[in-house]
Length: 335
Image (cartoon, rainbow, N blue to C red):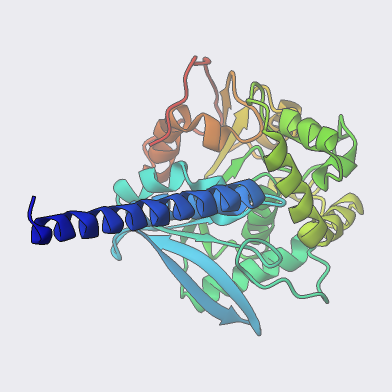
């Protein structure tokens, strides 16, 4: 081998060695990030998935507060506005359902409520249902949205129903997914909403959905760190909800627009009896019950729920006043 060839071979080995070292460093760095901030990594991956499904990141200032939201679908599509639940964010609750709506031709907005996700977390607010509902109304007005299909999951359903009661001129159709809003007795300690121990995280996950796989210890640790940073918002919201000031028991029957009530039959957080009470109070509503599904049925049982949601939005069914029950499936596939 001549000197030039030997020199080139040595240089190539050096380059390959350096590249391999850089790749190794990147893998180690990524491993550290996943280990120390798994919830952030998961959120970013979820957001990326929605962006590849045609959504866009948006932000605006409303009443002096920054609000983040996702927007997707054809401009000509009928508007659908989605509101997430307690301690959650738009991309987390709607990652499974929202892409189906966009593909069906709807123009979808999914906002982060004040105090959650990427929206502002002002210290002076109470984060009550009525306060958040007023902010949603301002969001609709700021985006010139009228005659929308409004959907909410859990606490978001409570907020959505409040908006529909206060501003029926804005809400053409209403969808409530395992919604809170009427009085009921929790079957667990409210403290698990802001877990301080790994056991409390396990208890919260057990209430959220049946048969969820156990979370790794490093994910539980990150959940507890997140609670220490932002749990005060959840605590204020819970204090307000527990006061009874915003309960809908005496108001629910005033909802007159088409109403779809979706419920996981095994919901241990907001029990099915709550959905049945809402259905009785609003006789024009349809109650759709999904066996094998828990509180986040809209995420874990999306494939079963989508046909009902799309037919409701298009006005082709299900029949008002009816209760439908969908049997359990062994596997739930997300889009």
